Length: 472
Image 1 (cartoon, helix red, strand yellow):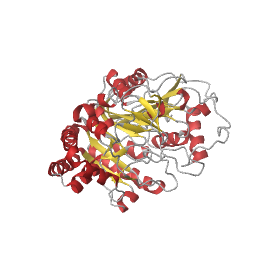
Image 2 (image 1 turned 60 degrees about the horizontal axis):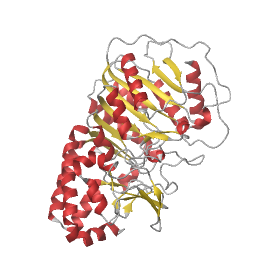
Image 3 (image 1 turned 120 degrees about the vertical axis):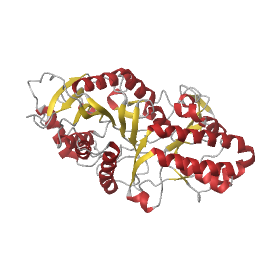
């Protein structure tokens, strides 16, 4: 355990709040603990909460991951809240014998002489995205630290929801650079949780761009709440000292999370730019999708009559539907419906826009916005995919077509992306509930997006240079 704590401390002191540079490995004098600790006996009494942290360095977030864990160590655990983890350092550090592999650990309670109660090293090539490996970690955590409520934290880079099956960098969350940057898809997450036979109090995405309808609608059967951001998230991520301290209090869960989100955002507004932090009651997503089904059907049915008006609204930069990140087709769904309704004067859409806002007022339990968003009076709901003629812009130089083909900017077919929109997007619970894909294929105008990105970091979830604030 001393070896593990030393590594975490060196990382945090070496990097502070900035991105990893291309310098040589900063770990100069690794400390080896020659006597591994045997696995302790499982706790016999349930805690109120067990927090399970699952993630990796992802190429440039190792220092931030270490900082998050050291924040947790400031609190330790107790009979009300406990914490487990399974993490992996990035590929550049796997040559160091003290940092190799996938590290699984238990935080100690306050009565222990050790801050880490137990740690073991699993294989470096353990695939974090594999549902079986996720299920094994969850099952082990429940055995060692049983609780009345479980929280799963997914920690690393996030990429929202994109359709590609053969381009793993676009697939969701936890981008593992020791496994060719393969990441965990929403389907793999749900499968892993279901295999563990666990219903979570909360799924917490401590990662960028995950606050999307396409993601959250898939979580309804496996968790009560979802916490995350539709924007990029500062590399410092969540405030784990705050989280564990607040979970140890007598406050109800929603009150705890409101305080936690406020305390985290107070730091995000300093080190970041446009950021949101939103807690969703997943039991209320049914009304959101019911209204969006009506919206999608109305947009499709009225397109012949209203296309000119819809296209004019969406192509005019003066209207600017809010876009969460410049390189992804993720737009704010309430802002989108409101602007189509207001400027088209379609009476059906006006009614649906009102109902949609009402549904989100019920679904959003608590929300924190950064100073930039407040200054610009920008309201936030959740992200949704918006496409032109059913094609995803893949980096500005090629398009992924709904039928599975890839075309270049001149419209020439240059290959296949490995699947189709019908076999990916149309299988999502969100689309099954709303039929949103019918509108994605019919719509001929992608909105001109208002995007409040940081002027010096328009790439959003980028690795950055030394001295720049890293985004998850």
